Image 1: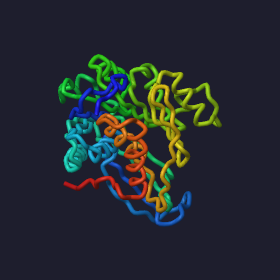
Image 2: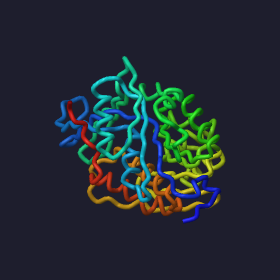
Image 3: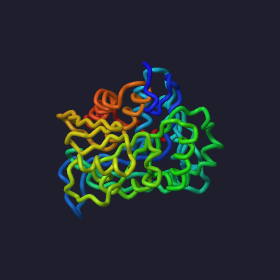
Image 4: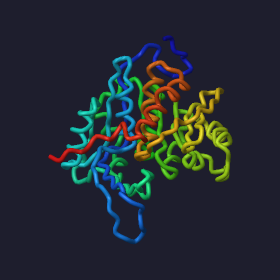
Length: 312
């Protein structure tokens, strides 16, 4: 399939897609009954591989159609948890190039899910991810061999800016996942360098502070476009999402999931699978509708569980 040069994609399928961002241990507690505040609640605890970029990389690895290799890099602690993260990534057919930081703890995310699978509260300690520097990354992996890159905004503002400049200089596609309202604004200084943005309603509002909370999804899309993001996937829960592809805009229904297990990581799966499919030749509309949304729905339904962290 010949690709339009305006897509900023390789003219022929390439084989190395790099994800950079957070990788940590997810400790998920799922309530077995309705949660009662300020009381002891029965839950089931499990430990999984987590992190926005890590979740997306796993979805991308399931979307390989042209022999593409999914590579992953993140800063982790030089501890047992960091080694467990590395071993788990390898089990997922991902090529890990982790930066082990002495004296730093591997990131940790603890989530309490209610009996319906919705997030009740999440507690995030991912400061180690922000310790990643471009110099450390370049010592760990040869960036000249990378054909496309996806970042999450758990990285520091400086690292994000430097990686965006690197992708621009090499003329390779750069995708970004906005992660949270507070961290999404780190993308604003180089919005035009982001080839493809993935964000949700709350993150779009942070990126477009001039808009009100009750803004329509189309108004938010207009705001993102005005900020310099020319290509993006904007989600709004179970409402139709918006796909902006330069001057083309599409509204796509989100598949209904009858039995919801949990929503944690669904957006990451959407982003990783969509970007991998798009970079391998599908249109952004087809990649989102036929690949990304299916991966997200499978994640919500519990058919794409995060791999368990195995004890040493």
